[in-house]
Amino acid sequence: MERSGVLERRHRSARFAKTNIDLGTVHCWICAATLEGVLASLPGVLHAVVHPATARIEIRFDPAITSYPDLRESLVSGGFLDNG
Image (cartoon, rainbow, N blue to C red; front, side, top):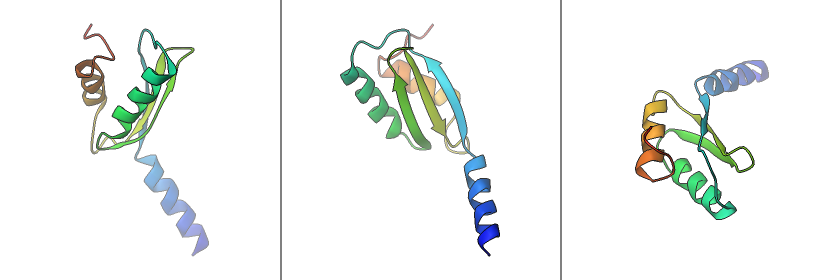
């Protein structure tokens, strides 16, 4: 029973995808925290972390609920990313 529980957890986590998006610049830790909060509130987003030193955001999400283009569009419409 214990073993099947471990396999079940792995199977559930296997359905999540991870992506990194270059933001260009991150002005301050408040910008980073705001961005993390905005993305974390989106349906299907499990985890969002901004790395200010590299100006990248790492996002872990459920592709059955949201997609990379949806995440990118949220960043563009929020003014965090250029549409280019």
